Length: 466
Ligand code: DUC
Ligand code: ZN
Ligand code: ZN
Image 1 (cartoon, rainbow, N blue to C red):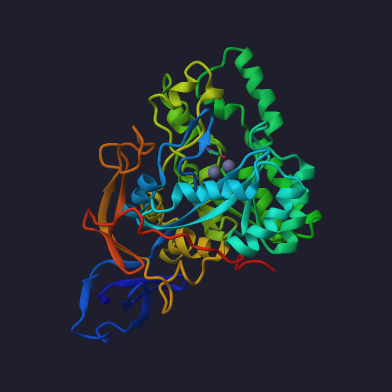
Image 2: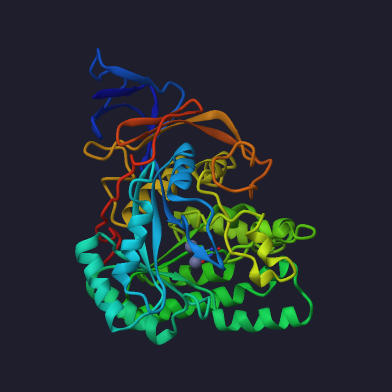
């Protein structure tokens, strides 16, 4: 039951250092100076490898019903792909639609995931209808269900949208029960006007998805959410999938004032652009239709986001994994970009794509681990069970080969998608071995995990709250 990961360099949020890691059953038992650990037990040779806590993707949408279809990864296929890519915990979003009882929607999400996950999983709760009942449900979810964060939408009127009054009420409730409000910050009603006007002009190609969601409408909603949270006695606020420089400015200003405001970005906004991907010829750009949208390469978004990650104005990198196939799914928007289901799938590639940032000199090794594992754990009440290599923590561990290379494409990925948003990309580094609660589930390209290994994890409150 015990094993020793020997000869590697452990990366912790304080930096890299040589250490051997003793695992006892499902948890980490001890860290030793190299060569000082017990002998005569099973060893895993980590020579030349980084030993990092398993990745935590705090924003995924497995099997999400959206835009008249359903995200194409099941909890089985999506968590298997995540595991192969070095992510050992996901936090997915249970979805309450207007009129549904929150607890029923949560039960439905448990039913989708239970017995099907290859890695551990937790849930946030999307609230699509804020009323007296759902506000009461927030307390119950925090107190009894291990759900301590709630996503609201300022976008998608008629689907997930909450108005400012509803948002304020949910924020006031979050302030009293210690939970986090996660915000999809785009001005949905204004976007709908721009979309209608574009379609009337015959502008139907995928690029108009981005052009009708200008960064000003992300920045405005981000700012409004920040001020609403201030009115709600500085309710903790986490801006999801932040994509744009002007939105980042709002977060930065709030954080400079010491506000309880946090944000994440996603790999697609760090690397991909409105022109090169969303503006690809014909209908090709549909592959990259997601919201918030990819931003212009002629502006400073990508550089600003990398800087925000370095300075901690952006705390977390998640994927917003929401895959749809081109065939029969993205194709629903042929001739009308507004009917293209929104979403990109990257759950398998986040760890590698962010390691490329280390190689490019944009992040330190410690910051890489922090943004992909330690901070999501602390942000969402999973720490120190998850997100760190320390005695007592779950033995969710990745051996990462800094000299390896990873080629990304539909022929080799494991996500249930008929294309890759990263086709042909080759990045530095490679996930070598993955352990989930002490069990090796992937090694040297051989996958040995299984559906049903993953357990639901109840979360506590965020470590970052004051
Ligand atoms: N954005 C997406 O791209 N997909 C699902 C929901 C969302 O907010
Ligand atoms: Zn969103
Ligand atoms: Zn999302």
